[in-house]
Image (cartoon, rainbow, N blue to C red):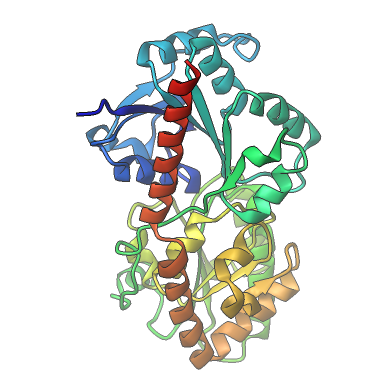
Length: 376
């Protein structure tokens, strides 16, 4: 029997978010007959690490000094003790972890860029340009992101595109069971605009709340829509204040992070995103897989996710008027809403399944391991 390839994933944490969910799903689905998975969190393990020890050996990095960016000795010792054949680095850890892996003598390194700020600060680009020289393969989660990485990554031929994938069996269309509406005190005839994500500036939720207030002002029926935001972050307090200032606080529900996403999305009428930047959004993929019509900003990989059949559901970023009108159009036209909901589900099943993503990464691990052995 061939010895398994030892793969070490390095992340900041696995608490909440699309990146973290992708890493956890990838580890769970990786073929354990061929690969031995390890996960190291530089900070703490977090929510998506719960139960992950059934599929991988989990590690939390020891406390590092303020000089670790220059010479991460402690981290390199931990990586050397694990002795991976391949390190798989994820956004947020590239510079320090790639340096530590190089010092530890890891044969091959892979880096997945899950998305970048917009605009992308020059200092971040300069740091990643330098660090990427130590990496053998850079995986971008969308074609749009690959084109951006081409502008500053040395030797763009090392960049490949591996879109994120989701579990289409877990996220599948279901009838509304009324539980979320009961929890929120929302009637069965009230449209629910839902969104899932980090309440951080890059996600543009201030734009969404502004758009929602404009939508409510244009609504002519008795049962006006409500907005449900699932997630948390540094912007929550200011967003709550904005909802109050705009007079829609009674119709905006902040749920925080939830583990029952499948139950929550079944109550949504439409899924909305107002991001200023995205890679390939996992929340968007999950919502579409669950049969929800998307109304999202035309940034990053969103247009590639929606495809030509749903391109009319894209809106410009940072434009609350356009977002309000797009949401109003979706909610007013029930037949086109149903049609686009079916198209959304079909699009994800056909193009963004989880197993396809996992197989692509497994191929990278095998090729990297083979190249590492040949280089010895």
